[in-house]
Image 1 (tube, chains in turn brown, yellow):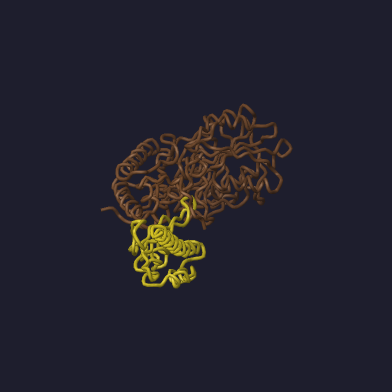
Image 2 (image 1 turned 120 degrees about the vertical axis):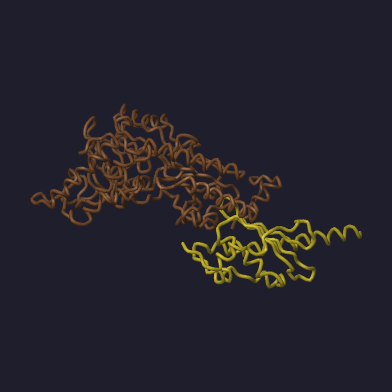
Length: 406
Length: 137
C-alpha cells in the first residue's frame, strides 16, 4: 500500500533530504557563528562551512568558488542579476531580451525596470513546445542590448531551452547572458562554461535543500561581469549582496548540490522512466489527453498534461490525497489561467485543464501507479459531468459553438 | 484554499447530474459560460404546462464551486414555479455554499443558467403553439 498523501509537486518545492539536514544541524546548534566574524573561532568555523558550500555549488555548475554570491533564493538572484546589470551598464545600453514563459521573478523585474524608464524589454515568443528559437534571440539584439535573460528549464511545462546556443550568440555579440536555472540545477547537467552563461540563478529548496538559501553565479573573467547591488550594507559577497550570511542554509545548499551531482546520472534515468510510466498509463487509460511542453527536451521529472473537457481545479479537488498543481485559473490568485501554457498557442481551455506532475527523488513506482489510477478515475467521473465532453462525443465542434459569456 | 463542507458535499455527490433529450416535450436547456473562461454550465429543466418545474439536470465544466453551484440549483428549483425560479438570486447560492469572493462568479453563472433554461423553454413553447396554429390554419 502506498502512503498517503503523495507529494508529486517537486517543481513547487522539494522535501529536505535527511542527509542535507545532517550537514546543516551543527550550524543550527553549536556552530552558530557569524561567517563575517574574522577574529574568533566561532566566526572561522562558520566561514569554513560557507567556503565548503561555495566549492560544492561551484563544482556542480563548473564555476569557480569565488563566483558564487549567496542570496535568499532565486527570486532575489533574478532581481539582482537583472536590475544589477541594467543599473551598472546603463551608460552602455538599456535593452533586455527575455521570453514570455519566464518565471514572474524575471518578467516582473523586467516590467519594474520598464515602468521606471530604465529598460526597454523584448519578450520573445516560444514555439508550441515552449522553446525559444535562438535565431529570434540573435535578431532581437540591438546595439543597446545589455542583457539576455532566458531560463534553463521551464517550471510549468519542463521544456529545456537551447541554452548553449543562446549563450554562444550572446558571447559573439558581447551581451551578458543571465540564465534562471532554478528548475535545472541538480536535475540535469548545468555547465556555465558549456552554456557560455554569465549569470545564473539557483535555489536550494528545488534540489532537496532548505528554503531561504540561494545563489547567483557571477562570471569573474572572460568577461568579468559587474553588478550594482540591490541590497546595500556591510559589503558582504564581494559587495554584491550585503547581509549576514544564512550559514545553515548555505551549508544545506552546498550539501544538496554535492548529493545531486553525485546521484544525477542514476536519478535522471530513474525519473525519466517514472515519467514515461506515468505518461503511458495516463494515455492508456484515457482519451483526449494532451502533453504540454517538449516530448523529449524536458526536465526528467516533469509531466504536464491537459485532460480535455475537465477543469483543473475540480480535478485537484477530487484527488485531494495527491499533491500536484494545475494551470487552471481557479488555482491562481489572478483568476487567469497559466500564461505559460497559453504562450504555447494551444486552446485556452486546455490551460484550464492542465495538471503538472512534478516527480522527485522520493517518488516511487508504486506511487506513480496509484496516481495514474486515481487521476484516470477522477477524470472519467468529471467527464461524465462535463457538458463539453458530452458535446464532443455527440460530434459537436466546440470551436463552432457560440458561447454565452457572463 | 479550503472548501466549505457544502461545496465538498455537492462536488462528491452531485445531485441530478445528467441530461434530458433536448427535444423532449417540456424541456428547457440553458448553456452558459465559455470553455476558454474555464466554466460552462448546462442546466435542463422539465417544466409542466402550468409552469411548475418538475425535474432538473445539470452538467458542468468548471471548478468545484461551479459544480456545487449548479448541483445546488437543481435541488433548489425543483417544485418551484418558473416565476419563483426566475426570482432566485445568486446571493442565495453564495450564502448556502459559503462561497468566497473569488467564487462569486460561479453563483452568477448558475443564476444565469436558470434564466437561460426557462427562456429556452418559453421559446420552444412559443414555437410549438405557433406550429399548432399554422397546422390549424
